[in-house]
Amino acid sequence: MDFSFSEEQQAAQEAARGVFSVVAPDSVGSPALSPGAVAEDFDRELWQRLARADLLGLTVPEAHGGLGLDPVALCLVLREAGRVLARVPLLETSAAAWILAAHGSAEQQTALLPRVVAGELALTVAGQGRTGHEPAERAVRANPAEDDEGGWVLDGVQTAVPWAETADLVVVPAHTAEGRTLLALVAPEGGAGVTLAAQASTNGERYAEVRLDGARVAARDVLDAPGATDRLHRLLTTGTCALALGLGNRVLEMTSEYVSRREQFGFPVATFQAVAVQAADRYIDLRAMEATLWQAAWRLDPADVAVAKMWASDGVRRVVQTAQHLHGGMGADTEYPLHRFHAWAKQWELSYGPAAAHEAALAELAVR
Image 1 (spheres, one colour):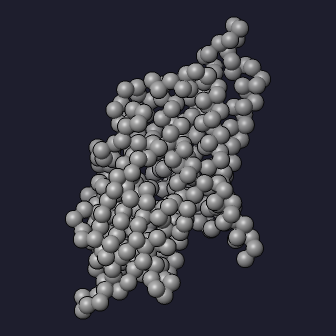
Image 2 (cartoon, rainbow, N blue to C red; image 1 turned 180 degrees about the horizontal axis):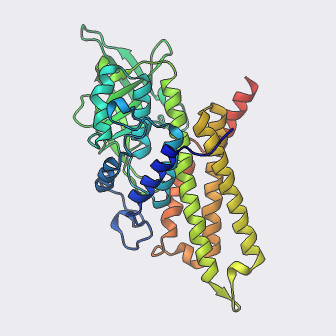
Image 3 (cartoon, rainbow, N blue to C red; image 1 turned 180 degrees about the vertical axis):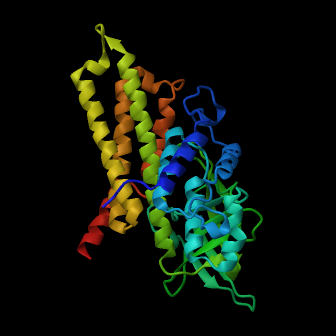
């Protein structure tokens, strides 16, 4: 079998590399990246550059103006985004658009997908549940509206929703009394029964707790399709692995550059066996992260996704920890960019479950 990337997938990666080349996470003194700072909004200029490059429509069918590509192509683009710590809801918007294309009604697709492609509509997903340690759909209850208009009434809380305060729509997983899961498209601002509370994040992105108290959602804004919620969660988890891989690759490059020019006893520290062995171990971590990522992106099988996230969570943590160690005092200097990568690595390590959670999920799959 041919496991190489298709021409379309490689073209998407090259386009992303060009767009993200203007992002400089290494620049010292950027207010949006200062320690402890919280960004007011995602990078709107970068968002429009992605739209002009047709990268916001990666997972949108051609009938609605997109490229109609698969999760593998999306992960190739996300890997490039991870290298530069791009502050955009690319993963959330693309994953939501993919689910809308697969499970949404014709009305939903016509109304929303062309606007996603044009960069006019930013979507985010409430995927962490009430605590970050439970299925997201269990955190919100959906009851049928008791009137002639139909629709649903939502009650519950979703935590750590990225860019909830500035995105146009939040995709909220919920469960019904009968045990069905559905996805509701909720307007975060101005909607009755919707309250947002700002939350701090490790990497400085603007997160929020979304509290729903009798929030009314019209039937046209609900996806009630079997399997849609699970597929969305698996794609979000896999996409996080791609972001972590991009970050890890860049951090190892930074470390290699530093130890090659830093000298001790008249020799570059890169020539010391202890340094070389640690760098080699992290290279092996990255290659394992990459191999499991493409398996997960190709199949989106629950077991494959769990294995990929186990490697991504543990691997990216080891990469940044080794980088801090080999940089010595420079690794702790906030005027040096490594601390930013460390903060983002911790965020992605824990997003959609740490390694231990996916080990438990894999064990449950094995005994079924």
